[in-house]
Length: 283
Image (cartoon, rainbow, N blue to C red; front, side, top):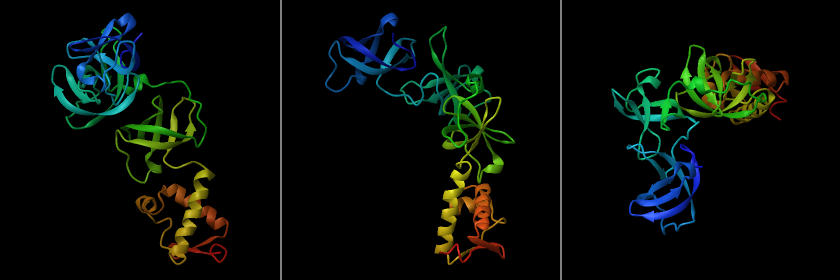
């Protein structure tokens, strides 16, 4: 059976003036409007990859357009219009915008901004809609991630502690502000690394790889920069997180750990507010 809000491979049943009718099995025949028919046509019996949803007149229709998010996805979508009675309408990549009902908004949204939503299917009406109550749809089971594992993260909200994120379209994560060189943006998609999975299933995240896997490449980079800079850099504990990120693409915490490792290896000296290559470090 065809699934509403998802991509389906549906068989062409017949051609008519409005377009092609596809076999939706229990859902009946579903129209693929003429403007979406592939170049060269599609004879009866062929299968087409289509997305199924309800149009503005509440009819099931198919399209070859691919939305920015499917049912069951979290996404950052731009507000394109607002109706005081119905809610906001979001651009999700289809000719018909996605409704964010008033009751599903956690705050008043503005046209032009991007909001993080969950795309859901109302089981009673079979209509697709968005909700900003994203935490209600996160997986609360403890995920099986390893420390240092790379994951995708969607920045969903800001708190005094840091930035909440949705990890791998499923779990709750957090970037601590103390670990960041600069703020993250709501709706930003980033590659992150797992620092720790807490007992409650929430995930502490970092933009940098954890442990030695992060420090070893950074120590090498610091040595290379020192060699190309005449053996000395005016950087150290006094350097700002922004300066460290601009120079080495790492957090200040990682930089300090790498400096400590190089100092213990006697590859560098710490002197006069900067770092210098030692005799062994320059070889």
